Structure formats: structure tokens, C-alpha cells
Length: 277
Image (cartoon, rainbow, N blue to C red; front, side, top):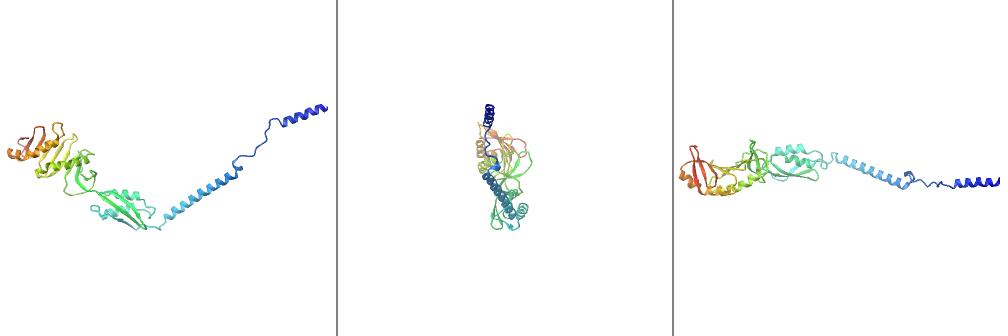
């Protein structure tokens, strides 16, 4: 009996110390006071920041910093006072801090003669406006459109009304800067004729046509390797006076699209005469 009790006790002892591991202290969030305190501090910080931002935004939107004037610090030659007042009423909204400067700039740049606009705040109640106006140098007609626009000295096309005496340029869409750049050289080339250049047209096939102040039309044509247009024009200008006097006609049009000379067409259209270099 004693031996049996010993074996039974031994078995119980073996089972108790056999495979069970003692429980370790808990590792969950609620068992980490430092982490809980950090989370609470972060929530408090974010909440305070959001509340401060909301209060600051509310404060700025109050009628405490009204804008009282828009000052144009650059003189304007084409933009009228009425246009400036209309743009200011349309674009200026809010107070000194909340006004959208980008919207104000875009609104003023939509005015017909305004090329660029710069806007900045001037404490305590003013918007300062600087305008750069277009300086129109010619009328521009996109080929085949029938529209008349203006081109500035940078070769940029814009829409505005003008009755100024300026040359007329025409060409395919997007070629205004190219035609304007060529125009300067053509003006110098025909200057010895004494009548001035009033119109230049570039065709879709890149052929040039000129009109002088006395109505004479010059068909300059395209550039050719054997006879560049500049050389043909220079030769024409040097011989035209003598050729016209010799022909004894009133010339309406000359055609320079020949490597060895040019054709003169009279105003009555009864025939033509050929001028040689």
C-alpha cells in the first residue's frame, strides 16, 4: 500500500511539473501606461492645432482687415479706367489676408490690352497692381480665317480693337512671330523704292507676297536654292525704276518667281513686260 501511494504521488508531481509554462505578465496596449500617455498627448496636440487653425481662419475672415483700394502703379496707355474698375469689382473678394491674388492676376490679364499683371498686398488695406500692356506693331490675319487680330513686338497675337496705321501681316496659324521677324528684313530691302511696305502674306506653301504703299504687289514666291528670295528681291529693287521707265507702263504687279528676271503686269491688264537683271 505504501508503495502504491508513493507511485501515485510521484505521478501527480510529474504531471504538475510536466509541460505547463507559467503565465508571463500581459503585453497589451492597456498594460503600457507610457504608450497610453503618448497617444493621449498626441491626440491633445492634434486637437489643439486643429482648433487653433479653425479659430485663426475664422478670425481672418472677419471684417477686420477690409481692402479699401486697388492701386495701379504703372501708367496705362490702352487699358481704360472703366476696364480696371470692372476687373477689380469682379476679382477682388475677401479681406487683406483672404483675397485670392492668383484670381486677381488672371482677371486683369484677361483685359484686351494687358499682356502681364502682377499683384501684391500693401499693408494695411491695399492691393498694388503692375500692368504690362501689349505694344501692337501690326495687324494679323490667320490664313483663311477672315479675322483680324493684333500682333505685338514679341510676335504674340492678341485680340483688341485698334484703328492705328500699321502694316498687315497674314499667314498660317502659329506663324505670326516668323512673319513679323521676316517683315523687318523685307522693309529694309524695299526701302530704296521709297513707298514703304504695308502688307506681307505668307501662303500655306510658304510663298511670300508683298504689297507696297503705292499699291504695287510683289510676288516673291518661295525660297529656291538656285535663286533665294532675298537675292531676287534685291535684284528687282535695283533694276525696277529703269525697267518701268523703259516699258512705259503703270505697273500693278511684278512676279519675281523667275531665276533670270521678273514679269511686270500693267494696271490695265492688257499684257505684261519682262524686266531683266
